[in-house]
Length: 140
Image (cartoon, rainbow, N blue to C red; front, side):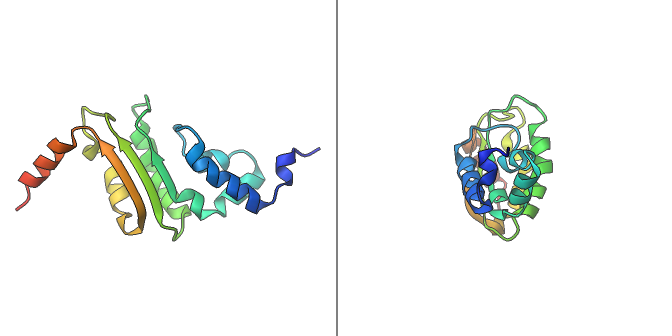
């Protein structure tokens, strides 16, 4: 007997998935990737829902040193699968790889390359004043 959730229409599942984007605690794998691995039906729904890929949350609480590299691989896929939907991006780099600095992250060029698609962009990072001083002092 099929699970009751599989009786829901794709439209209802899309709305449930949309709610999960903001309600699920941060994890190392972006939500759409996780949802698309549950079953064939969910994968089809998630892949056919570009708005799910346009919500990009990059938290700061990952112990894995390779997280930036993993996200650097995931972001182009998310950009492609989001189609023409405007992007909503939250990038919390506060204390994230503080020894290198968030501006040295491989994510920065990827995110800036999609700036024309941003509907919403939020970020924070450590030592912002120091980075701004350096940036301003190098400007003509």
